[in-house]
Length: 87
Image 1 (cartoon, rainbow, N blue to C red):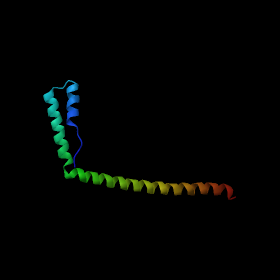
Image 2 (tube, rainbow, N blue to C red):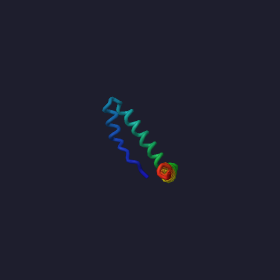
Image 3 (cartoon, rainbow, N blue to C red):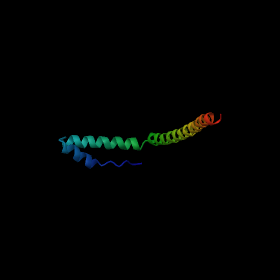
Image 4 (tube, helix red, strand yellow):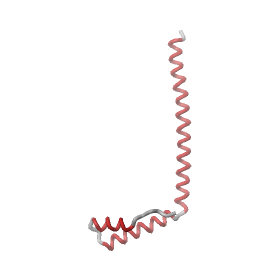
């Protein structure tokens, strides 16, 4: 898995704000190496899978809570309405 990282654009931006060319090249190279190491690591894939699983679990829990609370709300409304019109 590769990460799209434009090293030339970063180098031009750094040199454009006054960073010396040697420093800009060193920073760009260090960032590129760290991105490559991070995205070629298996931990990145497992973190992505865990985040997707967490998202699905949270979505399901949210749906359960919303449906449950809506049933409670309908029950309360019916109780209030029937208490006024039941007499």
